[in-house]
Image (tube, rainbow, N blue to C red):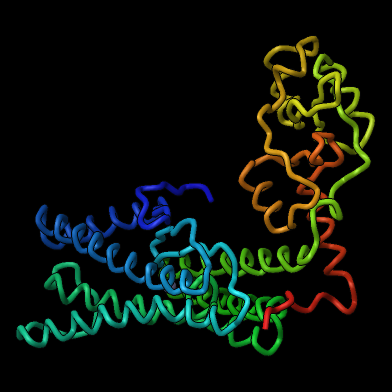
Amino acid sequence: MKWVYTIGRIAGTDIKVHLTFVLFLGWWALLGYRGGGVSGAVSAALLLLALFACILLHEFGHILMARRFGVRTPDVILLPIGGVARLERIPDEPRQELLIALAGPAVTAVLALIFFLTLRLTGGDADVGQLNPIAPFLNQLLVTNVWLLLFNMIPAFPMDGGRVLRALLASRLGLVRGTRLAATLGQALAMVGGLYGITAQRPFLVLIAFFVFLGASAEAQAVETRAAGDGLQVSQIMVTNFRTIPIYSTLADAVDLLLSGEQREFPVVDNNGRIEGILTRDNLIRGLSKSGPGSPVADAMTSEVPVVPPTLDFQEALERLRSSKLPALPVVDPAGTLIGLLTSDNIADLLLVQRARPEGRAGVRQRT
Ligand SMILES: [Zn+2]
């Protein structure tokens, strides 16, 4: 995801902030400034930072519950609509996902209750009405946490309500069909919300609907990809019919290879057939414009490419391909011989084929 900045790390989870969250902070401070000058702006900004802390606590509700089921969370992203903790995988049992999805809102509910009781006991205004940038601090925290809670329970991805819905559907329909249905419902809800936002001239609602719409399709895509490759290993999905390019070749040679077939990424090998790097189409184009067709392939290629063993599990291979940000990775056997290519095009084809099967692969096998 672009526009995302890592600001810290807590208990093995990277804390990331989406640029729109920062913009939201600025917008909120501006509202505070218009209501109460410089001190208004400062207290508005402080409020949002306190809210940020509440959202983090909410996310750690999810993270700690996930950890109980052996699911790690590499990072958590803070968006204006709340946080999204990225789970390493979806737990095998829908019941576990249900508990993980509910743990965050439970934290938020407890926080809201604490703020409410504190306000009540100190004789403060515990009204959960309109959010007002110049209202007392604790009252605003209460209101925002109540909103956060309600908002998170909207049954659409990427909100917790969407995960609750998916877990409930998945226990009957299986993970893939459950996710597909939950995503479709979420997108329908986002469309309705977005259209309402446009007609009622509420740009913030349109922004939220936009995030929800993207979140739903991303979730469905991720689950279908996972399901399509479930139980497969790299050797079963790799491209075996491919051309390599010797390291001493020129870019002109690489152009001939590129134009002679469908292949777009070429493993670069030494005299013994050992992998030295990979020449992608982007590498080739950049190399041509920088150094011309007579320059060596070795200068243009991406070296230090992670290789994957043929016995690697599909999920793990997909992660490596994604984190490499390359369109293809070489598959190398234990003897060091290049035996295949794992490409994102190939994986996309696998998905299409799986989806076209009439009986479908209705669900990821579930451990019982
Ligand atoms: Zn949550």
